[in-house]
Length: 330
Image 1 (cartoon, helix red, strand yellow):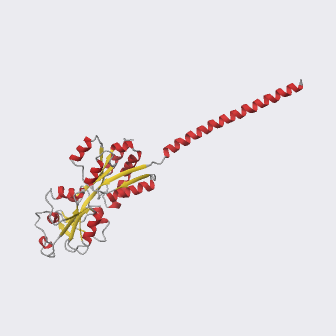
Image 2 (tube, rainbow, N blue to C red; image 1 turned 120 degrees about the vertical axis):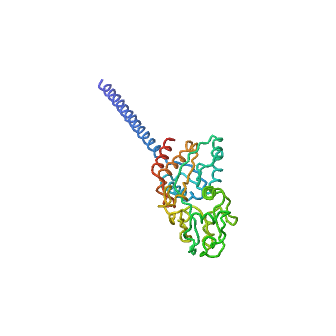
Image 3 (cartoon, rainbow, N blue to C red; image 1 turned 135 degrees about the horizontal axis):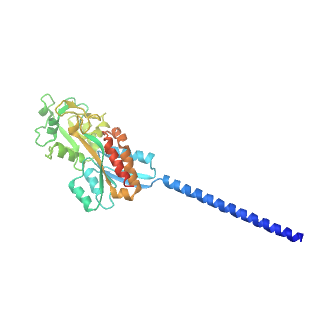
């Protein structure tokens, strides 16, 4: 009898051990599951983005967008490749306005009616974003000590086909009796189009002008030609001040030096000031998280890097409007 009671005791004890172990395992599994769920949630929130962002367009805007891309890849999303090219504004729109085109087009002019209509025909939504203000800058050789100050009309006469100016002495008898060599960006660039449309009012350029695709080529040409004069964005002058000299332009109230202080839509250099843009393919921003993320980074940081690359910043109210719009795409 005692032996049977002893066996019963052993069985009950064994069952108790099994129940305790199972309870402990189940509890551990529940805890583990809760921890895994939290970990997954945290990881999802902190997941680094991957993929690419493709940008082309304006050579003028290129230094600013390239700097932003560099900062974004280094400090924000190392897994995203932001590819910035500089085919020119017009050529950039051609690459944007096609099926599976680029994500952004940088532009040193506003989109043309025919480009906007093409986007509409493709059922493509674009968002125009100003990124900075630029001053159209005229540069000469460092040894040119006579044309450091010119009136707006004198500058135009150098590039206008009917300006009547071929030599420096045609502007002022005290200037050298030497042929002027004008330079500028070619028709692929929004800077050319802005100059032709807004400054020359669509008049023909002088036959002797040397137009180039690369801004670096223009810098080299003028830096080696004491009788040369070229036009391009202020940023290219700022980055090459050791080999170029900017012309101060008199718009009627005395010579104005192009600078971050004078380049503004209501500033002293306003007649030669223009906004520059990037155009976002909204469909790509909705489809690819990295495109929208980069667009927001640009909007939130554009003014911080504008001055660094030779551009005047935008009013805060405009920046806030872009951020609000982009947040609404999430």
